[in-house]
Amino acid sequence: MEDRRAAYKDAGVNLEAADSFVGRIKKLAKGTYTKGVVTDIGLFAGMFRLDVKGMSSPILVSSADGVGTKLKLAFQMDKHDTIGYDLVAMNVNDIVVHGAKPLYFLDYFATGQLDVDRAEQVVSGIAAGCKEAKCALLGGETAELPGFYAPGEYDLSGFCVGLVDDERIVDGSSIGVGHKVIGLASSGVHSNGFSLVRRLVDMSGQELQAPFGDGDKSFGEVLLEPTRIYVRTVLNLLRDFDIKGIVHITGGGFYDNIPRVLPRSVQVALDFNAWPKPAVFHWLKETGDLSWTEMLQIFNCGVGMALIVGKRDYEDILIRLRGLKETAWLIGEVEARKDDQDQVKVLM
Image (tube, rainbow, N blue to C red):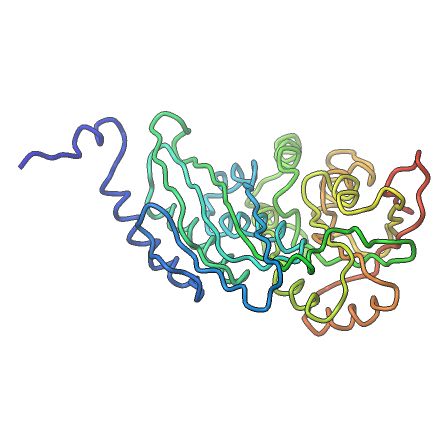
């Protein structure tokens, strides 16, 4: 019998490997399914039934993101089971800051030659992230592109859709003078600033496999620690508290991200000494001969998400956060702003 797949395989695309991979990810995806999922992996598109009961004006909220050059470290460490978790985190965190509940997630995985075992590790991380965010891995795309990527490398992107009632959207419009800023602990560098991280690692000659600090992890493992997913915590708070604004501290650090939710009439004054800076950030600062101002422009420096809340609520919110096993600190306050002032100032 003629092998219909031979010509494509000779060109570098292994359809048998692709079929095997789809079979494996079906099991991973099913573990994330919620009651809204209508279709199984394998059709041309995923389908999801919206439940808008109790909403007066449902709004879909969407996000698309990747994990940047953190992928390069995953290749160097040959560790692929957490990078997919990062991918989900970068998307769902951008959705939940607006008060939206993530509904479903789709991924795009592209590589030169499909390594089924490695790709399964990546998707296992995606599935774990979806479970943590309580959203369904609804589908995606696996692209085998011979000659496009270096051997052993791949690229990742993700797409997420969430739902919020119009009257419960969190957009920062009600932020005013006297409101408090609460910082939620990050798990490390998360998924931003890795072009600089990698440059500093190369300059310093730091071995990725070498132990780091007092812990039992290697330096590479510390850098690859996946981005925290804050969905459950934020949705829990939104049920009982009026959160004025929520900020995901991603690329651009504190100086670029906090103003995204602030009215022009106010600024946030951050108390730099209000939270501890994990050891990895001290290493980056010292190795790169950077100031803390430069660090706060690039990295989360230990705060992965910030909540702007009413001055009457902040103590109760901190108590709730402790009950949720969150590490959190009161890190700043909203002040009046003059036209020539920056919207973020840091009190060192």
